[in-house]
Length: 223
Image 1 (cartoon, rainbow, N blue to C red):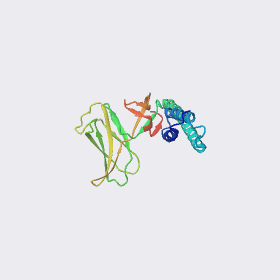
Image 2: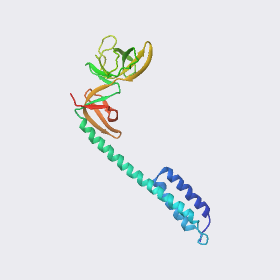
Image 3: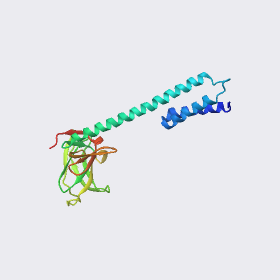
Image 4: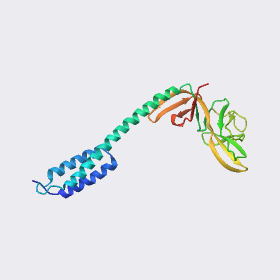
């Protein structure tokens, strides 16, 4: 009977087991089983492996098996949760959603937006930037302590209507000439469509822009 390389086989089993605990891989789990089988086949019946080693290996076996089963259950839970979120997102059609991305879509019409003033600021301005990140309009903002609304009329610094397309609005707060902070403008828009993508639900808004469901901050009845 072949009894050579028993120690090497035992060492390989232990090394493989340690790797499995970290990787939780079904493929490596099969390798673990094959190595343990080989160890049993090739051990010397007159000098069998230490029983304590088998106990440790079986404990590792159980740990790996439970880890794989836990991962499978977790994957099922994630899939179910994602599916539920996708179906719930469909109920947002016709609703007004609030987000703080600063993204707006110019179409020749005035675009309202909101901002939260900074108490310490002595002045504030909203900067409108185009897709190349160039500032095309500065809009003076009032200061205070409560949320304020402002409007971009869709025109540049020269008073000319800008080209239709995506723009961003950023609020900047100053104390004298020092910049205290800045934040993306808050916008409200009605959901016209929900698109289900591999990365999650994507809301198509009435202004033509899109918004990931994860970026919605508030929901209200549509206008």
